[in-house]
Image (cartoon, rainbow, N blue to C red):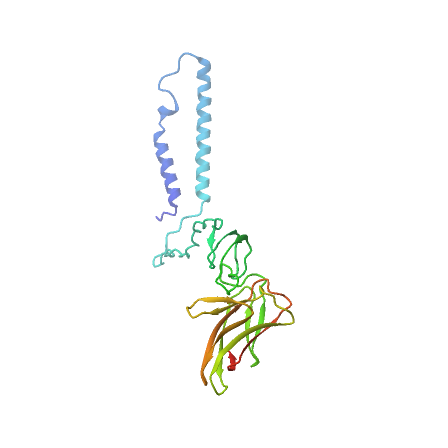
Length: 280
C-alpha cells in the first residue's frame, strides 16, 4: 500500500498514536473511590472532561495546519544546484585627506639685493607685484639707480623710456627704477694726423622735457675697473689720439623711479675733436 502522507502528517500520526498509548483506564478514573470532600468529587469529572476537550481542540488545530501546508518537493535528479556568484570587487574609495599644511607665518625681515635691510608683511601672488606694505633702505652702486624689488622685477608703477643713440637711429629701452643700460662710445681719429689733447664728451638730452642733475644716473668705467659717477653732460677724457687709432668708453645709464613723467625719449650724443664717434 502506497503511503500518500507527507512527512509532517506522518510525524503527527505517530505523535497521536504515542499519546493514545499513554492513556490507560487508570488515567481516566482513580483506582479507588474518592473519599472526603463530596463537592470536590462532583467537580472532578467536569475538570477531566474540560481537559480532554482542550486537548482534542489542540490536536485538531495542529492536524488542520499540517493538512493545509503545501507538501515539500524533493529535488529532481539531474538538476544542477545553484552556484554562488563570486563577490563583486569594488574600486577602492578615495584616500583619506592628509593633514593640512601648517599656516604660513608672517614674513621675517630680509635683506634687499642692494645691500640694505627691508621689513614688511604681505603676499606676492605674481612676480613683480607686491600686495604687502613695508619699508626698506638700500645703497646702490654709483650710477646704477635705485635697486629693484626683492623678486628682481621692476617696482610697481614703472614705465619705459626710449633711448636714441646718436644720429644713427638705433634705439634702446630703459625702465624707470629698473636695470641700467650699458653703452660703448668709440672715437676714431679720421683727421689725417695725430690729435693732441683730443677731448671726448657725452651728452644726454630729453625730448619733450628738460633734465636736472638728479633725473638721470650716469657712470663711466674707470681704468681701475670701478664705475665713476658723472653728470648727464660730461667730459669723458682728454688725451692724445694718434692718426688712424681709436679709443672706447664704457658708459652706464639708469633712470630713478621719480624720473620726469613728461620725458618719454632720451637722446645720447658723443662728440670729439679727434674725428668720428659711434655709440653702440
